[in-house]
Length: 79
Image (cartoon, rainbow, N blue to C red; front, side, top):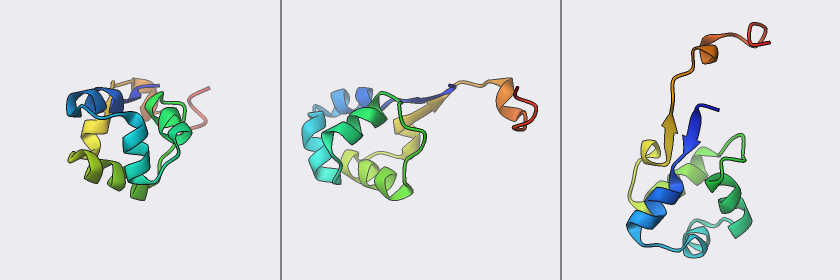
């Protein structure tokens, strides 16, 4: 998938522990781990906002995108 979660790099740069971040934003460690690994298909904007507030960052600091022309295809065209 061309959208990548870059939360790990930000956690390291801020010198935080994932456990402490999870507690601060009200997520379980498992939920945060799933997001960090990119294994979730979505995230609530409220959760994203809490992460940004806790890390003093913007959503673009947590996510990255590599262009893929297939992303421009509709659902019927992707198969």
